[in-house]
Picture 1 (cartoon, rainbow, N blue to C red):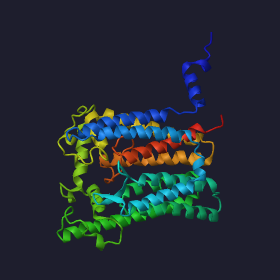
Picture 2 (cartoon, helix red, strand yellow):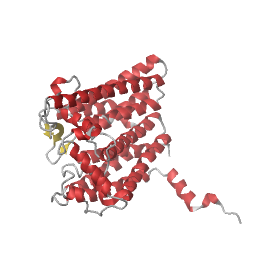
Picture 3 (spheres, one colour):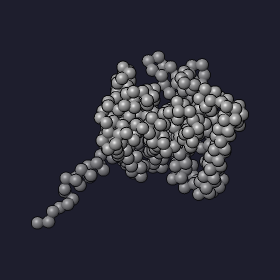
Picture 4 (cartoon, rainbow, N blue to C red):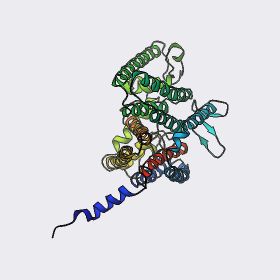
Length: 408
């Protein structure tokens, strides 16, 4: 007797998932990454006696509530209030640059709210995404005139927050916004000549930065100055708005031997040792020597370099597991974007996915020496309350797009 394949358990599960108003894939992957993050934050700081892992658990609880709340709200409401969300984000960025802002390590990026410090750049990502998706959803891109009007609005919506973020300075977070904007413009059928021009301008800017870093290297050698001690020595000689520590990060990537062993290149060297020494299965949880002995600086091991700790202790298999979980989140985000009921929902889901893709790529790539070191945390794994809460809210938007993808 022939088997009715339409009634098999697998097809029933797929049918149920397609008809459900809640997508379980992303939240399950998020939960798994958060649990992994807590374990390795603990491992990175076990020999310091700090309790950041406990604080991370509190932020995970708050993020879960935020995710569920945002996921149940119809995302269309943000279309009506997009301007106000963007204005709030800009106001918060202005506050952080005022006397109310808190400075750490030469950067002023936080606002002291008493119980915790809040990082407004995370609000800026949300605000710029909402504003950009709103502009594109309401605009018709066809003629050159229409395209220029849209580009003008987009440039204004992005340039003001980016300028304020760079003033903190926070180059890493500022670099998250352009890929997200370009991806939204690309799916909005903007003329291809725009992207050709943009790529040409990017290559030109890259050449200018490369020439500036070369001049910086020559200047430091000619004047017999220290790359780590004589901070700011070259800044007044350059027209580019780069700080010398940012030039050091670029130089440590392209010419690590030029940077003193205990300088900016130290973190990269120790990160490469951590990742490379993990082997196939790693040294075991809490058994990583780089963080344990302080070679991987304890100030960054639990946040920006959490992947290095994981790779050393759980090896290649642990690293691939984490990458697979991120792959589920990113792939499902693209799938949900394709299922959206309207253009605004599609742009929101895609924008969130690109933001996460940039964070994942940049963070992991810098730990293995593929790109210069940039202070971008790894979603759900790195320690940080504002960032974790932001990740949950952004993914809540994707869940909302899925929930309201069609009328039930």
